[in-house]
Image 1 (cartoon, rainbow over the protein chains, first blue to last red):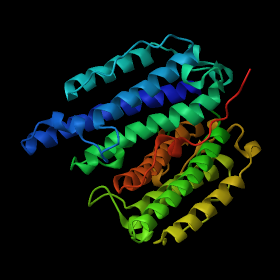
Image 2: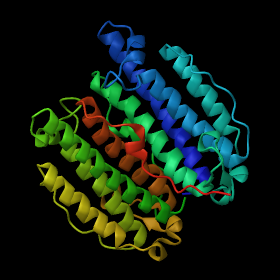
Image 3: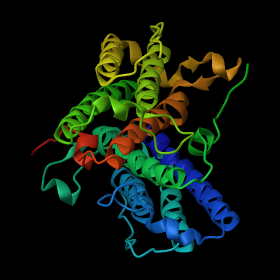
Length: 169
Length: 169
């Protein structure tokens, strides 16, 4: 699982997340409530609501692609309140992820990654993926899924996983 | 992020999960309820309860180590009902993961992985990690965390992530 595999996995999962939001919107419509109320739903009073989970998943993917691909991360302020705005946020993130090609991620496992929040310390690129980007990304993506699931949206595991690159023969 | 990095990440996260269960047990004791009632808690009536999320996280890690390390996966029937039994299940899983050394996982990204549920089709080892094992493992681990968090257990993101292999200089 190369650094490029990780970034492509984030791309696929964010695309899957757009699909969960479509199912949530259809559920809201069928039940005659505003889908945007789900953007503020949360699993505990002091846990992030859905909107913040989506923003955080996007940021984990964005910073991983930037740090490992040797790019400047674009600024995406956390201002989104509605499903339409959150989908735009996902699209902005996907555009950036798709601007970082596999060749820029080659050898990224051995790159030095020193985000500001580490205060001068750093992580090997492979360790940044394994200990920061991958678990944090999936934490927030799953929390977003869990909030919708808890609110009655009919999602199943294949909505989370999406398609598999199966081989034959 | 090598195949060995992925298996070590599963080990660390399962150890973190043991810590979430300890906090859940302390919370239950402080509130004078049986911690084992949390083993059957779930986020939706048709979603897996906590016990099944823990079993599924263990199985994703176990099968990844087996398929990628060229080992037979030990059988771990899903019989656990209590926190004590679930902790034993995690320990059995960890023992197996630790029995698969890095050298057996070298080159695993290019190995052919053909689990029975793919009905004769297969995945490259790197694709199995990226599209099956990693997202499924973190899905179930995060769902387990989310169930405890939703039930009032005081968990924070660092309980999920654990320690980082920081470098200096």
